Image 1 (cartoon, rainbow, N blue to C red):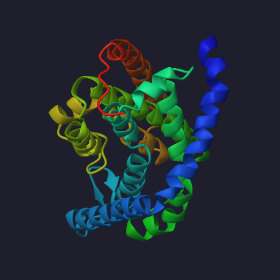
Image 2: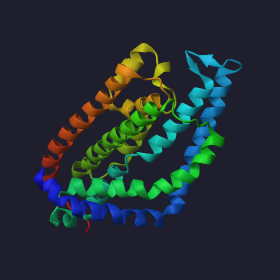
Image 3: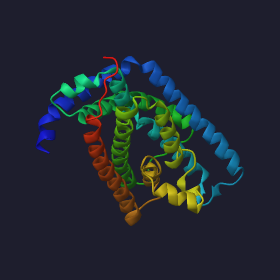
Length: 269
């Protein structure tokens, strides 16, 4: 713990530096965000057609569902596993040799840069919100308490995704190339996080599988808290699930990192 505290100034400097780099590629980011808005609009069209003239299906009102899908997809885009690509690229290009020579641990460096990248895109997300309202639907949180729980849940979701991104990136120490694995992961995350269909609509066997995986922490839990669908003990249980995955994935990432360091093969560089 003392080593982490001592390295905080370095991590902070890395975090502050990255937003400038991110904005240098703002066109690519804007195009990616536009694709998310288009996805939200198509989901709105599909689900509106499914509901037809009904306002409620399975105790999930259409207006609430559209808000759920809008926030869920924006959130999944915001906390995407960019770390997986960043880590694998540094291993593949040989930059990992320089990273390991620095006085702070490599995983911490990557997480700090990941946070900086997220901060860099936040202004673009804020600009996109009015368009998200048009493409889908937005409404304020169900209550002040729901809003506060959502923010806490969002931080936990971000931590879970960062750790999963690290783990995917560490695979590059064995395979060098992780593009296909990351693509599969992103689709699985979008589906099991409830970005296309809320977990409340899953058939019981599939929902049991979804609830046993960490993906639900990315969208279904945070947005359900936002909408007030999880309150009281259910809300606390949901946050506990997210906390459990943070601790578990953090422990796994630490173990995998110890093995990964001994597997380094610098290609290029």
